[in-house]
Image (cartoon, rainbow, N blue to C red; front, side, top):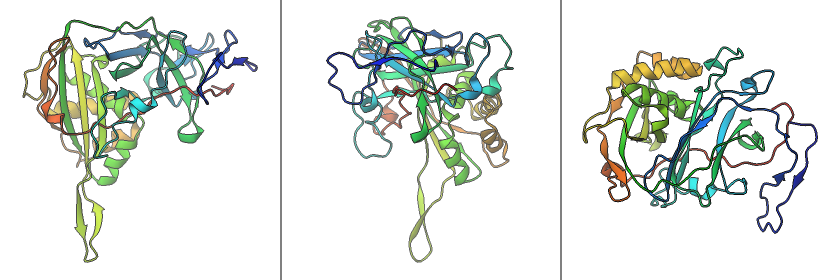
Length: 343
């Protein structure tokens, strides 16, 4: 960023803590390269499925992927101001015991990938895929890809990034909707917990599932749950409970017009998925996950039968197998102003 920038609170703004407008033109001096966004792929009005493919962060002189921890996808209104979707992405917490709210939204967590390109001057424009799926955020006009550095309370976000063309709400057509589950069994419960918290796990699973079905692309796949199975057993006379499972549970949704899978069939084999998980781990530089997948005790994943149907204005068949389970959430990306000249 420029060393000095001008900010302004929007006139009549009633929201305390909202992001100020960035007045200085060209204040952010880098952006992701080769970005391209899909149109809304969800044929129902009020629902959205948008994917953006893009390359590493850079400027006119070099790429700076090594300065990035992760990327976020931010919904913007018609004034190009961030839309707060924190309530939409936080209302279906896993195992909460409460029914998921109707306005849930998923945004893919995307980690930096310095292992995915050689660092030369050519832009690998399909290095990343980031998606937004669920209820359309109110006032959605465009989406923006922003680079982030750090995690948790130390996370900072560039106040501006690449912006898409206008996103029009699709209101017709029929799309094949496929919902399914996969169970990954690791060598230990510790490995399963580590995999669930790995920042690259969602993208790795997206890549592996897309590669396991001929004709599918990463932009067709959305991972909606990644969590350890919390089956427990009693140990000792004191009745102390211990985590006893090494399983990682994964839910996914596919929306596509190019692939058809019969209802009740497994869309891919466990051995195929396992091979593609290893390839994806290599591509992402996810060495810890690759080590776990190479362990002799890491079995072929158990692939559940898919629930399939057509999603459209008048015909929507959703997975009965998931109707009684709450979906896990993915991290929402809401812009907070943070200025750091090194990012």
